[in-house]
Structure formats: C-alpha cells, structure tokens
Image (cartoon, rainbow, N blue to C red):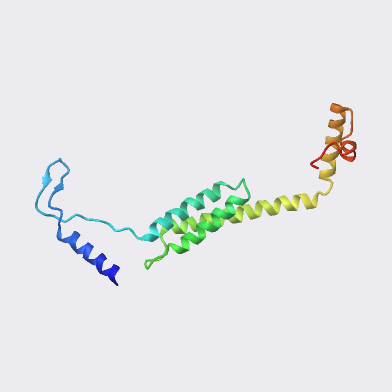
Length: 155
C-alpha cells in the first residue's frame, strides 16, 4: 500500500511540473513550468527483451546440443513471466516462438544423428579398420596390439 501511494505521489509531482525549465529544440529554455513527461517502464519489458535475445541465440546455436535447450527453455519461461495485464508483448511472443523452434530443431537433429548411427551399425567398424591400417603404415605396429600391451589408450 505504501509503495502504491508513493508511486501515485511521484506521478502527481511530475504532472504538476516541478521542472520549471525545459530545453527547446532550438536550444532556448522554456520557463513556463511545463510538466516533464516520464515514461515508467513495465517490468515485463525487460523480461520480454531477454526472452527475445535468448530465443535468437538458441536458434542460432543449433550447431551445439546443450545451448539451444537451455536458451530455448529460458526464453519460453521468461516470455511467460513477462506477461502483464495487457497480455504478452510482441517481443515475448517472438522470443517464445524462437525458443520453441530452437528446441524443436535441436531435438530433430539429435534424433536424426541417433537414427543414422543405429541404422548403420557397421560404420564404426569401417572407421576402426581404416585407422588400424593407417596406424600400421605409420608406426609398423597395429594399434590393437599397442592397446593389448598396455602402452596405449586412456588408461
């Protein structure tokens, strides 16, 4: 209640015109006591802008796996939080759309890659054989033998 009262008093003071001088376009000052106009920003505007930015970053980061999910989900949440009595702002709607698109795009790409590797089980064996041939040409030793002896590998 106290905060609302202070807010209305602040608006009254601004409307009455306590700023006696106002600079005109030509550089002169107007001393008629005209009121200064101050636009009080809605707190949802910042959330809507953040939603838009995160939605765009999520859509542009589709090359990576994790950022589109994080940015897309955060964009959707921020756009829902930015709604006010007037509804959801256009920036928030675009941010929500871009966040959903980024999440759907990365889900489709991930599913496509998994489907490719599941449907082609011999692809790793071909790469493994090619690697062994190249390693044998370079070092005159099979890579599998090197791993069996404990000289190579991660352990």
